[in-house]
Length: 281
Ligand code: NAP
Image (tube, rainbow, N blue to C red; front, side, top):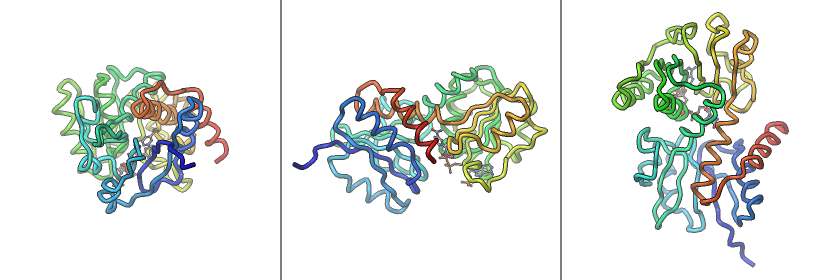
């Protein structure tokens, strides 16, 4: 008998190391949903043809590097799309009435996890990275009424673009881009967030120096693999409280799951699946 399972998945380039298939497949199984989550490696130049050729059996997708902004050309946003409408970055799409509708679950996923650790309201915050994750993180803390946000990205245009976008939306937040890590003035900040991929590879440098860190700082790294980057290890050494991005991954995944299925995501099942994958890597 031919399987009628609904298909969901992740498109990006590269995607093969993703933890999402196990997390979502565990959730489908736990709720008895006849569905599976697959990986689709799609090169930037192939995104258009890939979206157009999607089979009707595919009901929802996550979008990751490098497609989060480009995918906007092929889908629609409406009043239900939430944060995606404001930051123009989409990480979740769902098929509705034969059209693809976009959402951003990185923003609420990150904010929920950060707030479990520290409330960003009225805080001075330094951010490394203004790419996909950097846009979501910066928008989230502006929504949560951060007092001051300084952003550094090696691609200065990207940081400037993000600052201009957010300045128009959040008149009360003091937000600017800076040209060096030193100018982030981490010594004067309450929270430091790494939203670059620097730290994923063993050979990666640590972007901040030990003398920039202080005991009252909270350091959040969106990276979850490895669980402890050089930045987090250094922060712990200096007595700073820290978090990696595994909780963000869980919460954004739960929200995507709920958008696709209309059912409450099984948090514990998804969390255990993430933990078991990390421990076997
Ligand atoms: P991205 O769109 O490529 O953005 C990364 C940004 O960091 C780019 O603008 C990049 O500039 C910049 N950058 C690179 N090296 C830098 C450096 N030395 N100093 C300052 N900026 C630098 O990638 P992304 O989608 O934002 O992903 C970033 C990380 O977040 C990845 O590790 C990803 O796995 C993680 N992430 C985690 C979650 C979660 O749920 N925890 C969700 C999303 C993403 P160039 O483009 O010029 O290199």
